[in-house]
Length: 374
Image (cartoon, rainbow, N blue to C red; front, top):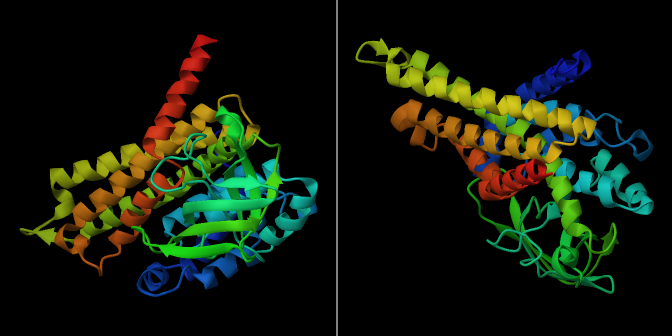
């Protein structure tokens, strides 16, 4: 069985890699980090011109009509450079939510604009530090009016539309529904939030009777959002693998350049062990990510388990590689001038972007228990 990508997918990977190498170097990441820019508009424009924002959108809605695997290769390359763009929010979350739950009219209205990069989308779930669940979501939708606060919302300050998890008054899991809202309308305010990674903005969105439309059937929001998160977990795992691998190579290159007591520090056993541990964790994450990609592409029966395993292992690999990259660089790795911080910041941010490790472990264990009991 061939678990590798096709020649066409590898060609896409090379094209994206070349573009990002040319247009999204560390100077661009630092520019966004140190300025008031909310994202790298020049890089985003280039991704749009390549058609990547419409990668998995069907052709009848203005997209390229490709699939989940193509998004995997794009995600990995974006992760390699810690790209400061709203790709995951708009493509992995908002676009996929509309594809899954939107009515035909909603798809016709929003998907062509998302594909063309005319608008940016996001998914608004959390309402503070509590994990979103049927018990914690208080934002409500009544009579087409949305009321409540969502925070933190990824790329919320620059997004034009948001798919919002709302309480529509049912019981248990049936209490939640999805709604779509245009963020330039009345009754909406945005507040920028500070996070560990300013190159990927987050905001608080406050709704006070804002006009919104129901997406999907009422009471199906919790099931729908978990299905969206399963797909996003796989794509984010590829993004994390890409970032982790870059951190590993940064550490390796520095270990070969830096001399201490007349020897390359890479010749010391402690450094060798660090690099070997990074490699092992990354390869484990890559294996899980490839299996998750296969399940996602084929809509396989083990998608939930595969997505959770990819999410957990990729998060652990990225955090470990980013931390050890700083340690390998020694004192200079902690300075503001060092580029090691870009990957540490992104690793920490992505670790919570789709829910905590605890959420994904519980999802994995629950699914395995249910399958074993069947």
